[in-house]
Length: 637
Image (cartoon, rainbow, N blue to C red):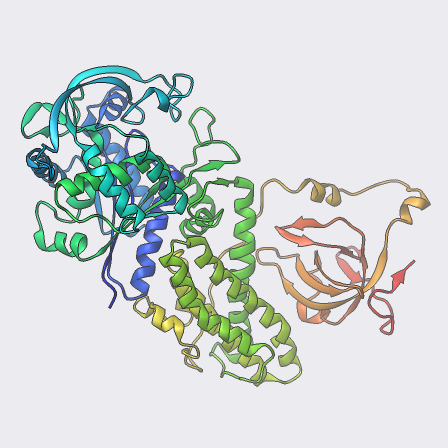
């Protein structure tokens, strides 16, 4: 059996409320923990808040609060946000809690008494004179600055001179370099690994273990006039949260016997990849196995900032898309690990495309056909179907492929594998056309299609559970499955659903979202045009005969049907407002007349590539239909 895995996020600074940057890392860590549990692996997931330092004291003062009250208020926002996002952490660590303070005092004593191999003190006293950025809570050198300013906060750092205790980082750097080069300490992606090795070659200095002029922090047990440097305090949350000072058995399990994975953004690379391993070495504690440092993201091409007004509260997205869809959308905007851009305009499109059209529509039409044609009971499998073996092969490969991606931190690729299978299943459904089979009396064959699609829905839902836990359980509940049934082993076995078992019908799993701002071209297409036109203008309109291949209602729209049509030279999709006059089954195979050369338009988020012709009088509407012997593609003129 695989060893347990211990997954952490950085602890978030509480100078302000959470935004989607915090959410991105935390959702990813939650997904990793859930996925490993699906594989039968024990996982511990730690997150929390960093609550000491000048930045916190200043933010509290600006609000007219003492620092602890201020921290308590902001921490509530973080916990509320994680609950709203269905984050399932094992422990939420706070650097102001007693458990952590006791652990830090123990660490500081160990470091104070530590000796290097050549007999030097790992911690020594000295005077620091230099530049300090309160926003970063770190010391900077002149070469770190851009035009004299901190590159991250665009402010000039403070000139500081004070007596501090220093940690002898320089002694440990050669050892750390060797561990990174031999991959005993894994730093991912490789670009970050190269960056760390580059930092080591820049002849870094020792760093301050304490601050004399900072008052909001944990006092040193051996010098009450100094408090622990905020990064020393913060980094050791990874051990204080699993029992370093108060539960020896738990600490051994999760630090010595587990695979330790730290997840964070790349801006805190130096502290995690150099300071942290060096202090662990001095404390004679094992090092973590993996550091994964993902990239930054911008919002609509610009860095998130209060001044630009583009900071996105995760609760805002939850209100629009729901918790699970928000998790999905944030993790699928660009590949995990690299820099990327969150475009608000793409969120609705992505939601409607992947979740409403692909997954939600598959669930809806499969279950509705089972209800309508099989009395709500899962039909028997049938192995004599077009493209069946290829689809089953994809489904059986999905669990192992997805888990391999997860083990390599390719979060987006794991999700893509599942969604690609959903799309393949929709194509399988369309190719076999079970609605036609029913019409032709091939009920067993239709049932076989619905059974296979149901099995894929089950497997995909298990794989997507770590991404969208509530929605996955909602879908699995259609087939009577519970949370206890979730495992990769269950996902690996095809033909697991019991024929004849009840299939529940639920409302749309992902209701389509109507974009508030209609496409400009669509607005123009919707306008009525009065008056006369020149005959040359009318001559530009290309009218052709089309045959309807498929028809279905557009979810959430009483008047719309989505049609797949054959116009002779190609197949197209159009959306038509005829659902109040024609049922989908009435229009299949019917010959109609369509405008061929309209620009594609989005209607309810669905691309429509043409327009059909109909005659209307009062409430009565009748399609314009050519003679049955005229083939698709024939021109009308």
